[in-house]
Length: 290
Image 1: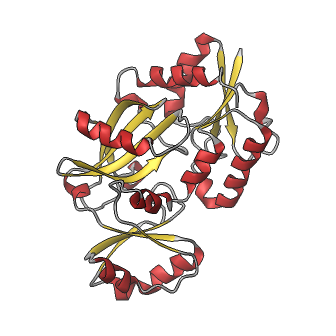
Image 2: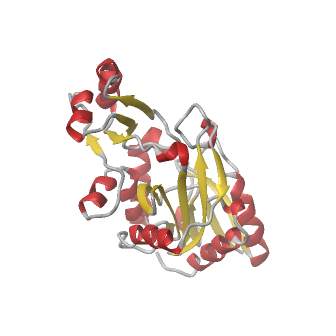
Image 3: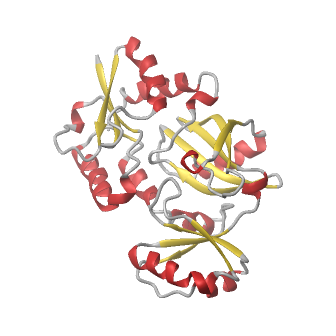
């Protein structure tokens, strides 16, 4: 049997729930899925036909080590998907600023460097934002993500300064459509659109992640929205096994919030044949040289 590594973390030694869906398809095809912890020094990553990043959801807590791990697999020639250099470019959300500079529709983003003494109220006032969201530039699952406003910013300055002292920090305008229309996620497999979901926060929150009470439902975007999301992917100059394009809808316009090509949850159970499409794509990677 060919052996494929599904990369996870020590808290999830058996991977995520949707990994079972994919493993059940790959095993009868002669492909053995092995869950491997990304920072387990005993793993020989070159011994696998393919290495697929799936659920190393603690990466942001030790980002330097994770980036060093990606680099080491690149040097060793492991068949990692997505590709190491592509994932490295995606770990830090400064890519949003870069995408905006290229003319892509992106939620406006100010990246405050670690150790900066920026005044939070001034950041909001300079950009004409009455309400904003603060988050680390390297994070997952809405970790340390919170809201402020032009009225509350002075009182929130100490919290903001403490967070910016520890890490690069993003400031973005709050997008009211999240509360009314939700956040949408379009999943692409091998560069082709597969399926989509809409994620909605609970009534008293703005975070759409399930651990914060959010819910996700199958969603069917228009061809125009799919094309707008696909245009974001075309900015990535590398083949992609999988990607999730997250955004909000402003009327009929897709506005990017995040491009998830590191360890996205793919909502495979929300669409018929999505797990099969992903299994097919993983099987294809086994025949690709690193």
